[in-house]
Length: 168
Image 1 (tube, rainbow, N blue to C red):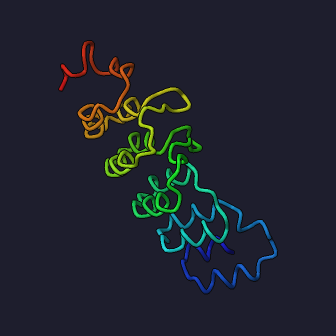
Image 2: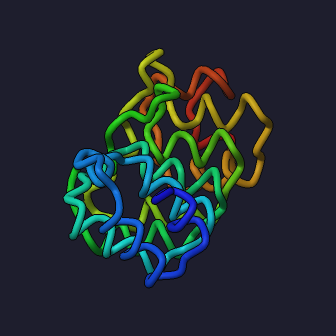
């Protein structure tokens, strides 16, 4: 029931549901945060994180990207500005790599504006952000990464035979 109350966003119903629940572990479920993100219930994110003690991790940021919920990503980063922004999600990607793969340019630029984001970190499959942008031919993202030199020298072999500076 609590999941439906959070999806609906009515705080009174959430509190009634919390009080009626006999499952003491229901509020420790990170899925509640994912539901708030997916249903754009951004005003509940801080409540869920603080009251339920949910730890923000890489998957939380990836849920924001997949739901195209830019505001939720900002809220999460404001709540916990930590290295968790570089953690892998369930798909084996960091939030930055996921944004490049999915083609969400605005999310990618926002993530790169965060000091703690490690743009060199590779996926669990040992592939770079540039590699994943190339898979789906996200040329705007590829262009941004190359122009801003946000890659390691080993990534250059994907696109050129000489110096990447010769390409741009």
